[in-house]
Image (cartoon, rainbow, N blue to C red):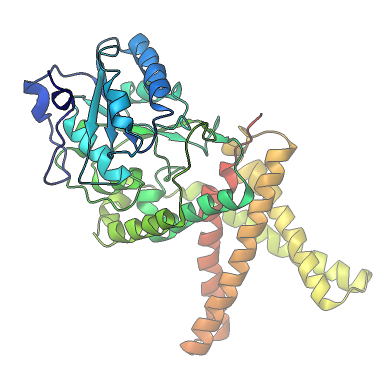
Length: 408
């Protein structure tokens, strides 16, 4: 048998996964198929295969397959993986020489897979392999999609700097604005570590753009129950990072492409707005109005501070009031899993930033409605407050109360 024959054939044609694999006639089907997309991962491939095999051998002996899909790496990652086939009978290797890109690599791997459950994990060891078992348990309990998330209990990032954190959060915020009913279903839409039932994406025509395949699965699949498991994103140990500005641009383009397909209305039927939580958030905000006025009165009349300084300080007192009540009441079911001073300070900082953005948004909306459309200024103010209230609630729900504090 030649080396070329040892490689999996690369599927061609539409990026569409069948209900049952076409390759079941040539090899035995399995329960779980895990795709590892690679490009220049020669320094990591032997270790990742060994670790994944050890875990899956214990959990699903001979009932899984590990599919390395390599984009013809200059460091010949595919060849290094191919040399391991005799030692790892559950390993499959695919070498793509025409197509490129992580998202399409994952889909081509799934097309060649025989598993009932399909998964993906990075080949650079930044995704902790041990989380696989927890994700599989979520699927076994009935979830259609199980996502490893950095933004739920047990999740976080190891050594990310401020700019990288802001880019990640900014990408999530864009997703919530452009495609809320898709991105809002998970806490970490940028995750590249998840698994999905084949039936949830079977016969769905995929058309990914960029390197984030999860939003494609959510946006085009028939995904019912979604489960999440926290994980700590690790820094790369070998090789070079492939995160570039182009990937963030492609991510935005992908969101717009999915948004234009009109699937949001159907997904909205599955997505339930947390009305009770929103009402509590609104009551807290209403109380903040009186706190703001009382503080302003004291600062102006008792302390004699200038009006501008009094306005700023009283607004900040109201923000502190609102944050404490929201943390202790509105979002108590979330914040109780993030105890301690440091996580609370993080939530407070994000709450402050979001509220500041809301004030700026409110000013822009009032100016637009009054100056451009000629609306009554008080009506414009009232409508802007309503819009910003929804903004503050939704963004705080998805960002401020998704803090993770990783103990090093």
